[in-house]
Image: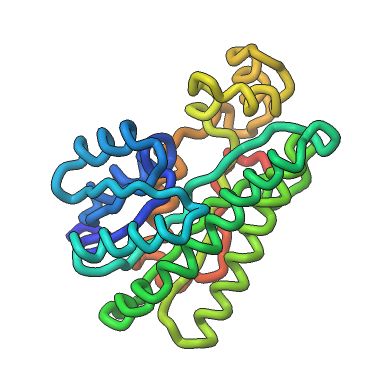
Length: 265
């Protein structure tokens, strides 16, 4: 028996990267997965490669209409919803003085409002599914090490991820108090190699401190990591699958740090 047999998950930002790898591992573990994203072409291809157990749904996480549509599509296709992964997020890579109000509004809309809407609008389905499972349903929120410790380069991103960290704990306590059977945990990735290597993601390179030099940014990142390498989407996806599974049945309001030791220093 696989650890997610019979489960149905909805993952935001699942076209590629951590979200795409999470979808793949969840299908391998026996789940059916709704892949939500605004990157239609990438997401459709991801769903196609995963076969009949995957469904693509267009999902702008700042839109109530999109969330309601995604939940309805998942339930129509797979019959229920056991797992929500709030993965979609933006990185700004600018300091306080350089960031504009427009940039902040966009960052907070995706990183904060998106998590709120996903949690709120998926909750009825998660609560209903929880009544049919001995260990209930699960929400996994993508936070960051930047939501645990201070940062000199990405204060606004850190502000949003700090909000996700405490929202996770508060939601977990609320749902436990109400007897919903919905566990809520967060995962805190460190620097992920695919994010630095992805074409066009120069903001992350700038955040590390070496503009327009991906290889130099990679070397500097590795030097800071006690484990001696950067993380991969697979490293983080494994943690998400664990938190979503019944293996984590006694965990709620917790934060799983997967960062190569960077916050241990």
